[in-house]
Length: 216
Image 1 (spheres, rainbow, N blue to C red):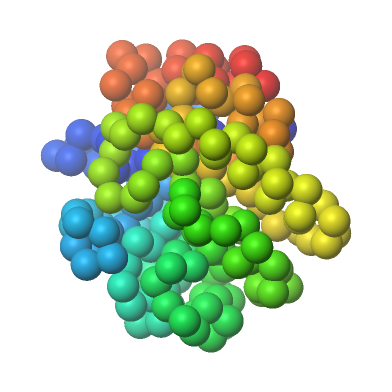
Image 2 (tube, helix red, strand yellow; image 1 turned 90 degrees about the vertical axis):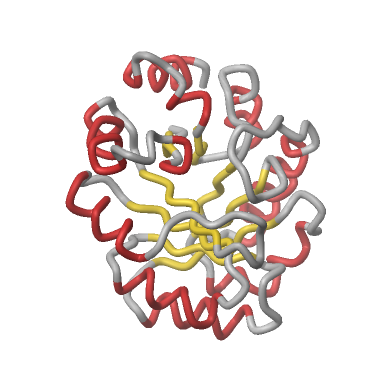
């Protein structure tokens, strides 16, 4: 079954704890935290304290997606703050193995994210060190961007690779997910769908989550 992970980046910034609690109560499976440093991407969002707040506000798994230029430093910090999954970008460091190992050593599960222009093959040598892979459906940096249609084919290619390797790795798609593309992504092999603007612009979070899940 495909899981829904609301992205707190699209929530009301003045009510983040309340919003985290609300989507958890509405049936969200995970909570996605987009961490941006103003360097790797042209935006600044959450620090480790947001993870601690979300851990108190919601009892669902926390998925910290680090869009930062120094994942070797920041990944263990966010793991220590209480994130269940910590994902770093393949484009952010040449020392991916070391960074992924540091996440697991810090007690969290390790993930890697791929930008739309990054080849799927990048993840192949890292498969033994991964618990999660995030495929970006938009170029990272801002919420509300239109979905890149080629992401569906990339999802299928990556799902096939994971299956061929017999790996226990979750496949997540982040960016531009709506009711118009969620069924295609789930059919292609996405196990977790991050929903930001689509969900948080809804007047009824539970109804929006049910709408997404009804399409699988």
